[in-house]
Length: 94
Picture (cartoon, rainbow, N blue to C red):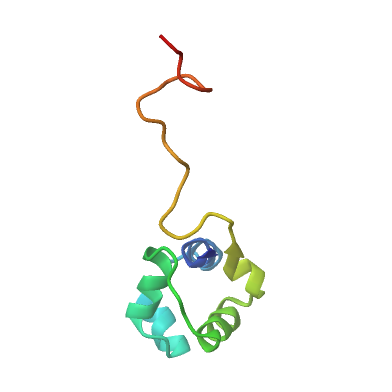
C-alpha cells in the first residue's frame, strides 16, 4: 500500500514558515482541489494521479519518496489482533 506523507510535509512547512499552512493555501497554489488534498491526508489507500503528485512535489520542493512511501500492509488490514489471548503461541490444550 502507498502511504502519503502530506500531513508530515504540511507540518514541516508550517514549522519552516513559522505560520500555519492550510489546505486552502496548498489548493490555490497547486490547483489541486481541497477534497483531493483531504483524501490524501485522511483516506487509507487513496488513489490519485501522477499529475497531483508532481504538483505537490513542486509545491513542497521535495522528492516523490518524501511525499509517498510503500508499506507492505494491504489497505484495510493492520496487525492481526489475538482473540483475547495475552500470551504468544498456540492455545494451551486442556
